[in-house]
Amino acid sequence: MATPADHPAHLQHHFVSSDQQFDAAKMGMWLFLITEILLFSGMFVAYTVYRVWHPEVFTHMSDLLDWRLGGLNTLVLLASSFTVALGIHYAQTDNKKGLVINLILTFVFACVFLVVKYFEYAAKIEHGIVLGSGFAPHGVSHGVDYSTYNDLFAQQFFSIYYVMTGIHGFHVLVGMGLFAWITVRAIKGQFSSAYYTPVELCGLYWHLVDIIWIFLFPLLYLI
Amino acid sequence: MSHAEHHITPIKTLVAVILTLFVLTILTVVTSRMNLHGLDVPVAIAIASTKAALVVMIFMGLKYDNKVNSLVFGIGSLFVIVFLTFTLLDTAFRGDLSNTQSGTIMEETRDNEALQAREPDPAGLQFNRSNE
Image (cartoon, rainbow over all chains, first blue to last red; front, side, top):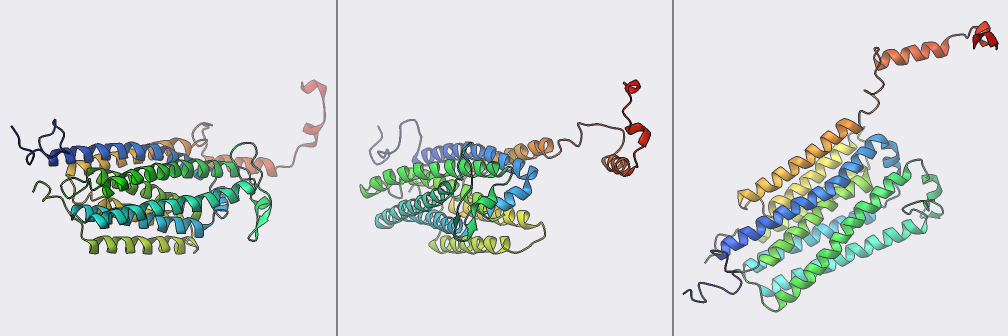
């Protein structure tokens, strides 16, 4: 009969050891992340196909997206990836305070990202850049005359923009839910160097969301 | 301890990576605002790939991880490239193959230009019912 010391509470009975359980969970997460990459790759392929067909439209339309806001969001997401990695470091070194602070910071960065995105979307919708037949760029703001962006095929660019950033934004929202849950568990003291699998897996998910944005930013805002 | 062998990435490494990522972000903005004569897209994708590789290797710890996870990630990424390449082999070359004619595209263009430049025969422009 195994003693409680040999059989910690987090270890499920169908695993031989904590290590085996951890490795199995992590590999499962990597398999899930690959399905996520393939989900986004469909949209990246759509982007590439339409860009190859109408490169001048994509170059022109990317001017309408503010690189300062996109760049700010890139820095915010990178910083949140850093706080996740730091949080896992603290979990591994049994520093509960460090873990909780970094998880909360990650949540805050995710909020900042979505708030910036909200302002970007609102400005576009206000100037008639919407999905579907209502598409009619109009109005002037910050010295940009939106009506000069009513090119043929302009909708292709903005359809791709809204769908890609929308699905990415949904992933950020899901990540916020995950980090709220992980933070509560961390505050309750459920994680330690012996068991921090949920932190590790949510971290992997969050880094992937960051990587998607690393590609979206230059493709949509810069080039 | 069962977890003694888990790799703990030092804070110094994490800080170095995030600073590099910030610098690369600034670099991609700067290069996109310069005229790189058609190299804009490859440069932007190269910088983004470098950033993604840093995140995957250090932040996600694939460099220190079980090799089977690298295999999963590598094969997945390979299929993304297959997906992209084979789709482009279709969409990027449409029209080049479908209207098959014996001449090359350049020859066809030349013939078309010659036809455009030719002075029309006045008799051929006359409406004549017997032509029908």
